[in-house]
Length: 400
Image 1 (tube, rainbow, N blue to C red):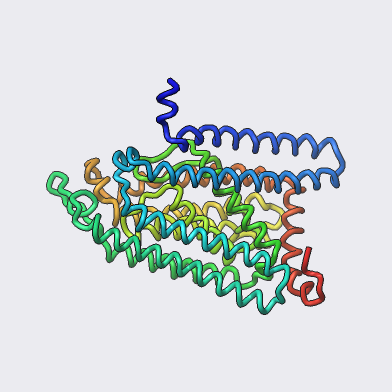
Image 2 (cartoon, rainbow, N blue to C red):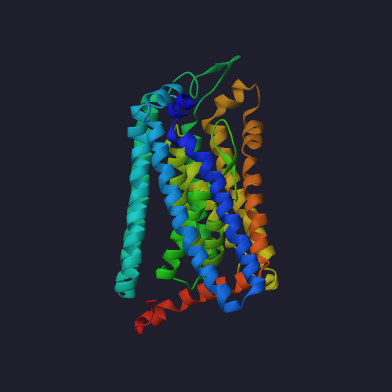
């Protein structure tokens, strides 16, 4: 028994522990919060929420970093590489560029947080644009490296591309993949700027802090998987909820950008990449769609129904993510449908329907949160402070 345990990768041993520990920690924090809400003064409860969020953030960061490291170690194990067709080229052309992209995003986030405390608004704005451009550039480089891997390992490989399934030939449709990826990116960016044109908040220290907190929490919760799908994808314990809450609070422009970073992190955690455009559709584009969770946040007729506003936004975000995954499934993974003897579009639509289960879980928990007056007040206050930050910073009062 002990010898088999020692032979098991550390990631596989740690994963169920992290899953149940995360569920226990979150449930304990929620139960304690409910008890304190009814038993103590509002000021004491507010302090508890502050320290609970801080504690959960540190826990999420620790759990996420540990699981990423263990996952990378597992992927470099010779036995795992042999059983899962993971080789040095996958690591060098796929995992390492994604890891670099994640590291750049992390360093830029820390740098912006420090500058938000020290620099004047004009300098901070310029650095923010530069940091965003650098992050996008690393993602483009990662896509280029994946293209090199595709051309040398996937193109005409006899399974993904060129496989014969009872007379039907599977093929990676590169042109369709690139068109779909480009079209979705253009539509997403345009929609984010149009819907967020009245956004008055800035990437101040509060916004950056909340972005880091929500990404860390979502990443930690993404390891709490209810079930995995064979060709990638999983249903998790409301892992998208934290970044969807950020998008609700700060609008589509900031929401899409932060969710894009989370999408790159997801590509490192659960790598199933064969083509650069497929990578873009399944990870950065698909997960950045969660940034539209707040499109109804400022709708006046629903002002007293935040649960409805969040639920409607979650449906939009889930539908857009679903579309991105479906295009990837049809034009990159037709071999899976053909090997199962099914029509490609029907197979992709059915396979990727797991997205709605994942979003539904996040929606239910989100509706419960938005049913709390205390939660709505705290969220509104936090965003209001960020909206006032530029004016305050000019008078020397932006720092907290």
